[in-house]
Image 1 (tube, rainbow, N blue to C red):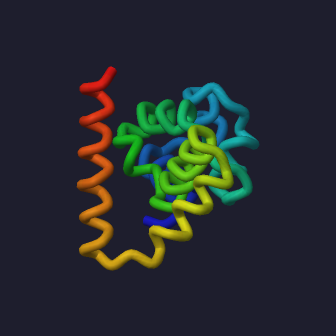
Image 2: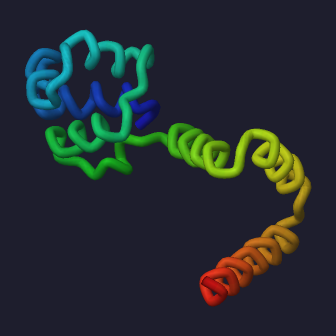
Length: 118
């Protein structure tokens, strides 16, 4: 399957629902379902959870990787700020696979060490 909208459309059709029926069950307007399916709007996490329940699929199946990655990057920016986030991402892009693994191990050690200090 392709985008979130494509997945919603396919699952809605497989469940023999029209836009109005799905919208009613998810508690949004039928126009919102159409916008999701056309890619004009991306459902938020709460709506993804409702859609997954109504369409009887795991929420992860509805999500596409860029959406998840975008959410993780947004969270990183909220936590440490845009300047530090940009610096980190710029440094990480040049790492070899071995360097990346060493960095992850180092971060895990630091996290464990910080927990002990608290």
